[in-house]
Amino acid sequence: MSQKSAIVGCIIGTAIGDAIGLPVEGLSKRRQSLMHPKISGHHLFMGRGMVSDDTEHTCMVAQSLIVSGGNLQVFSQQLTMRFRWWLLGLPAGVGFATLRAILKLWLGFPAHSSGVFSAGNGPAMRSAIIGVCCGGDFQKMRELVRICTRITHTDVKAEYGALAVAIAAHLASQDTDILPQQYYRILTELLPAESVDFLKLIDRAAASAAQQQTAADFAAEMGFSRGISGYIYCTVPVVIQTWLRYQNNYRDGILEIIRCGGDTDTAAAILGGIIGARVSKNGIPANWVSNLLEWPRTIQWMEALGDRLAQVCETGKNQRALTVSIGLVLLRNSCFLVIILSHGFRRLLPPY
Ligand SMILES: [Mg+2]
Image 1 (tube, rainbow, N blue to C red):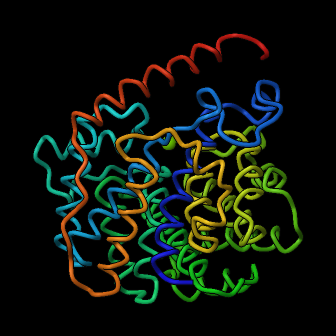
Image 2 (cartoon, rainbow, N blue to C red):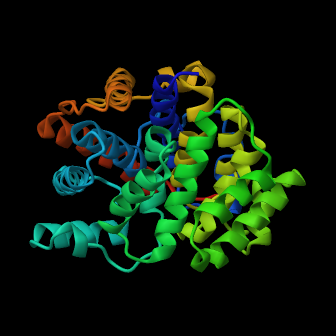
């Protein structure tokens, strides 16, 4: 498979996972099964879906890679600038650490000191695309993941989690399946010795995948029976466990991880980015792709973004970013907010 198909698959895979997981985000596993006993596709608004911060961050990283051509300093400047403008678009979903870090950027803190001490999911939701683009050059991938992480999150745990996702996405974009213990061994070689606690979690995820345990059973065994939390040491092991079992099956992987409950949009977005890098756009159910109700960042826009990023990766020459008008984004975000609020009110009603 070409790198272009992997890049486009990663971006669209992130978007579709995000959109299908979003309507049940924050619901416990039990309440989700009561309120939504059947989930087989989009269910945000009349059978259509919309994306949240997970996809927007992935697109901002892609844009920053396009303009920087991999130059670390330019990448950092680009991503910082994009985070600042993104917040002005009033996104309905923004992680607390990310919000505080971007406010610090607006107050004049430079990118190297804007991050706050947190191990939330932010860095993991946007690192798969770095792995697909730069996984062949591990040093470069690590530097890019580090910059991408530390602008918002300074806890080193966030960096380990984001790196594990980038490495998984890189491996997925290659043509051969990987055995669970193989992935664990690769991580032990690439991650620093201090990441031992994280590696133990990945070891458990690999063992669980080898035994074909379900994602929900694995999450329960880790102490998250109510749902996947927003903690990167919970989300990433569950994502990895699911990916190792569904390396070529986008649909079943996404539906299974959403059934874990909790931070479902982020977990499905990260998993979708990784599996998408393997199966490409063609491996994602066609009705899931066509029922994404997104504008101005349409599926065609995301494909064009992936195409341009693939050209930059191939030639090593940077290009101009794809533009989106902030006015259109504000309009879109206002409609999105109304839909999200209506879901919030619906949750006040039974069944409990
Ligand atoms: Mg989200």
